[in-house]
Image (cartoon, rainbow, N blue to C red):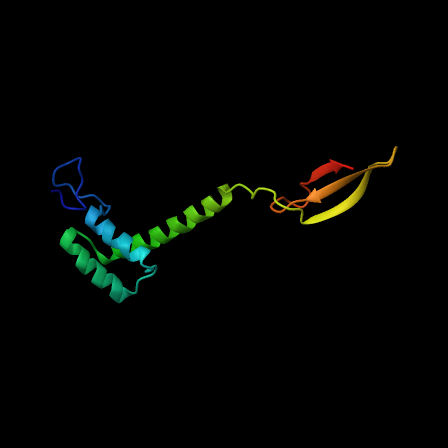
Length: 126
């Protein structure tokens, strides 16, 4: 089994990047899921000490993993929120009567529905 942190391209060549093992990722993910978002320096040292039994790791790797994971979670949450379609129209929130055609005084009811912006409406002929 190849030790974390070594390159695959050349035997014995060290990469500048840390490559966590599957066990290390699982432990870090479990800690994050349990609510640990910004570990203290002491917690980082304990975590990296524990994870060193699964492969090469430094304190900075743990620190940056949590920092990056938190940022990715925020980014994912933001994108998910932006892609969510507006809620389906249910019941009218606000109704007003407007005269839209002044030539024959026909009236239309303009109904603003929840989830629609201020001037997106359903126009119904009365």
